[in-house]
Amino acid sequence: MDKRSLCLLLICINLCLVIWLVSVQQLPMLEAEIIADFSGSGGISSSSTAQPPTSAKSGLRRSRSQPNQIHQPSRTPSNSNDSSLVSNTFDNHPMGTPPTLASQTPTPPQSSMHLMDLPNFVYLIDQPACDKDVRALILVHSAVRNIEKRRIIRETWANRSYIDQTPLKVYFLVGGVSAKSEKWQQFLGRENHLHGDLIQGNFKDAYRNMTYKHVMALKWFNEKCAHAQLLVKVDDDVFMNTPQLVKYLATPSLPEYSMLRDPNLMLCRSVHHSRVKRSYRSKWRVTYKEYPNRFYPEYCPGMAIVYAPEVVRRLYEAAQKSKYFWVDDVLITGILAEETGSKITPLQHYLEQKDVRKLVGGEADLEDPPFLFTNHAIKPDESMTIWQMALDRMQRPLLTQPAYSSASSASRSAPVAPSANISEVAQTSSTGLS
Ligand SMILES: *[C@@H]1O[C@H](CO)[C@@H](O)[C@H](O)[C@H]1NC(C)=O
Ligand SMILES: *[C@@H]1O[C@H](CO)[C@@H](O)[C@H](O)[C@H]1NC(C)=O
Ligand SMILES: *[C@@H]1O[C@H](CO)[C@@H](O)[C@H](O)[C@H]1NC(C)=O
Ligand SMILES: CC(=O)N[C@H]1CO[C@H](CO)[C@@H](O)[C@@H]1O
Image (cartoon, rainbow, N blue to C red; front, side):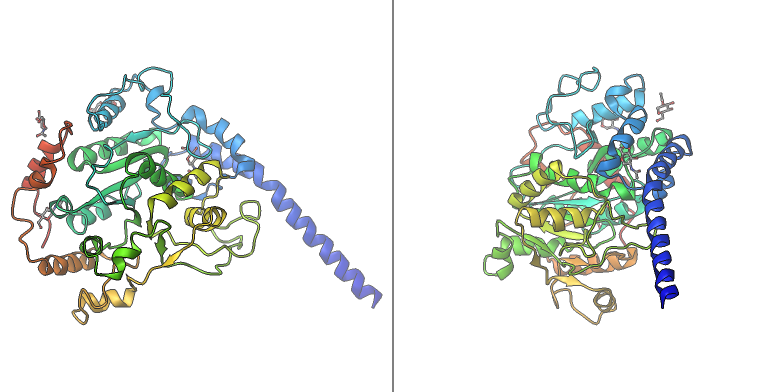
């Protein structure tokens, strides 16, 4: 009896010791990883094992990373390719007048330049503010290297020949590449030159930096598109049924029409009672410091979320003051939504993997059931097939005329630089759709 309880006590003490040791050692580990990260290959994927930033550690993280700040244009005026990238950005400025080259001078521009705990946030690639007729802004979260996914999306549900005739606007959000991957930056510059649809922040594009991207989406909408009725946030492996959204926006007799006008809308397939991953084996382990509770609050998985502007504003303001937590959807649509009293509206218009297979296999109709989003991990050929079905359904011969001329003519008084080249490119490279 006595021995037994003594044994138990010893085990307890041991356990406590182990826990304490692990928690104390996290800091030096983090430091080592950051040094390795920045002196190492500098590739985008090399950071995947880095510890997520927390507010307790962010001071350290910042002071270490600042000298290496990736493609901070104001710090690298000597790099001609960087400055050409920046001037390309300014060509797209809504007013058509380049700001007084703040990027070339060491003084930062006056508007709020921080994004959560990042003090020097800037857009490395930017787009003009939304036209008045934009009703829904669709921001697609994409990783720098997901060129193929962006290509498929541009060929299908975000095809400009279609989108430019609708009140929708689609942009892709990417992060920065490390200074050593300049080729990728040049590639992105060219991609944007062709398509004019990238928005790039200067935080490193990394899985554990997704919260920056999400808050950047809120920021961009808030500052450049707040008159629109909706912000749609999707991942680049989701098929978004854009014609269906257009229909809902334009048909007052449908219940969805009024649902999408709810000023408190935050629409998604929410997740309840999700347990926090604590396993030490998991690459994506969340520490107790990062998030202390056992379960997350109800939240919207990031793959597809529809926000009303008022909700975006509230969440953005809360996020700017919030401690960084790398699980972006939990932080923004769970924790901060709770904090700001934003409720989730359950999304019915959604296709599971098996429904996608049925649809693609011809066993179901595009409108039966009607959907706004598919599950994530959609395959290219599935996207192509569903888009072809959507095209077949729309009677108008949408895609016969030269791309982009009709829709953009009305609103474009500002000189948007690449438009001439875009149509050229679109015509010469229209090999894609089967
Ligand atoms: C800029 O990019 C071009 C190719 O696009 C390359 O030939 C040139 O060396 C680059 N210049 C600098 C300073 O990196
Ligand atoms: C949009 O669709 C048209 C017609 O199917 C196609 O020729 C074009 O390449 C598509 N646009 C893009 C950017 O893929
Ligand atoms: C996130 O971005 C910041 C700013 O660019 C960078 O210092 C940090 O290392 C990035 N985090 C990861 C995990 O790559
Ligand atoms: C590649 C290409 O065609 N570039 C053209 C883009 O548009 C400008 C101005 O319209 C031309 O000067 C470029 O030659």
